[in-house]
Length: 167
Length: 126
Image (cartoon, rainbow over all chains, first blue to last red; front, side):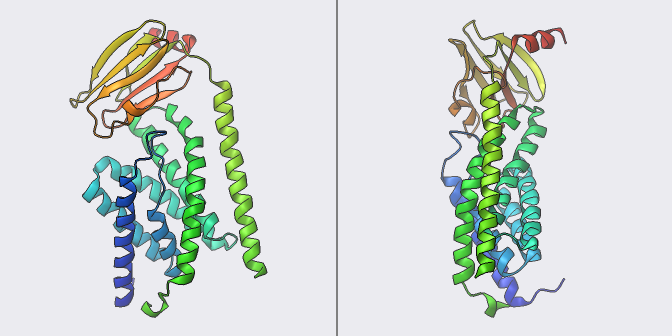
């Protein structure tokens, strides 16, 4: 795998941005209503990289974000949760983008929902109970709303931020 | 431009379909939930205790790792009122009384779930 030095710098910036967005999000307490509700702000950076640089680059940024956020602000358990969410969500987003039938909104909505699904699956394994699947519909509704917002913001960024000169 | 519009239309269809699916699932869960008879406490995947909801009781569960959660059953509802976990999500959740409802404490690996009488009977025998 060959990446040119300018892209490396850009990927570093995007990874840092994704981490800061994750941290910002952890400061907003939303889970008092339903545990696990999230805005998915970091997905703005991931969607941006996915569209501007490519799938491989999005995987790299996502990986860096998950590992470092877990090391800095989390633990092994939060790593398992976010890894499961990210693998499902990123795979679905890459595939959906490839169909070229949806804009960033559709792509990030699917990403948001699958992130929640991945986390519920891990929670079911950790807690050894299937009962928490009842949270999924509520999480999906909030995930869709957050996904639409993330998709719209990403679309603006993709349009306005020129990164082609880095390539 | 036409291409872009088509994508946006697809987006709207996708979002509407997903919202409908989630809404139906949520509605179905609400519709079929029954007031449960028992609160079952599950710790690290094992059922450790069962309490009928019609008797007021306060119990504290200590996890093998040393954490604790206090379960209060009052007025036919189960609630976790105190815990030493860092996020306090279990404490912040509302009290539960319907079949299938749960209070989950991830750090202490504790789940309180409401089951109907029939299920609880089976669990007691098992």
